[in-house]
Length: 481
Image (tube, rainbow, N blue to C red; front, top):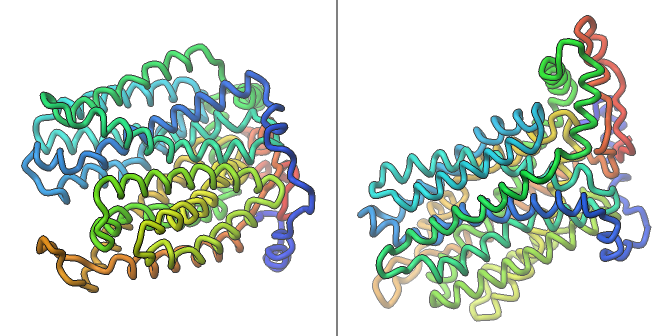
């Protein structure tokens, strides 16, 4: 985890580095006012892109029944369109992450959004189940490339004191995208002539505006500065230097990279495990109507957005690991009311449970950025996130399968019912415990300078890679020592 520290010393600091600084958190509005218009533009374009990325993903989740009827398939068959997206997002993260770290944030971002337009439009025109799966598989590759780029674009030029709150705000673009998808699906997915298709056609339109906006923005200052370092470090060209830099980065930081994937697996189990099967629990065990399920989901996502922003902001003062662990402990305490309250009061439990789940998530963008090797940030952040997503993609299937071992009395309509509450409670308890232990053991680099670092670039020389790979890293203020 910490390449320049002994194992014993590192283990001892796992406790001491959890202690908050004791500083009073600054006024969040004052913190946000420190951003220049240049920095705000980068944050906003990243937030909007991440929000619409989520919107386009949830268009399938919210039209499963209509798609099953259209293609004469079961709902389970249609959910393969979701599973394929989750499985192939890692391919996009690797491909577009390497491109963004080598050639810049701008053009990979634009190509990503062009692909969103293409595949979302094509989904709306599909007339066969096979064609639907193929298009959604390619959509998954496009979707995988956007997260790392958005995190780098939004955060690497931001003032250090604002990175925590911006991290929380950025991450909750995902919850905001779900809310927008839920609203627009109500308005557009029930067209008397075209059925569900207008929702997908509409979903393809905003990325065109996002592309136009990004065309007028330059590269981030941090990336431009890094390119200058690469030019000075290698006479053979920037591309050659990037590949050597990546080789050195992997050699020096591979333990941290493995840790990040394991951590993101836990985080994705946390979000998918608490969300994917929850509407089924509400509908089956509580016999909520469709409107009640929708309202509960909206309330939960409002809690998610508030929690992500709040905990991201607090992490700037009390630390990334302390914020995540605290949110997980409180989230674990809320598991029982989240799954076992049997009235409309469960909406309050849903609000606060997702406040904690997404509160922990709100720290993730900046935490991953600070842990990543500077020359590989887009690739590492995006790939760690998406590989974690791949590992956790079977969360709902695991819960549903285990749930069938705990049958309940059939509904009045004769439909089978299962005790999903018990399964979700056990599953979430185990996931929270896993994340707490892993984050406690893991590294933290609060306050790391993201603007200009010369570690791998300074150490890359064609004649002396081995000696350069042992050169000390200049990483700003590092909590782990």
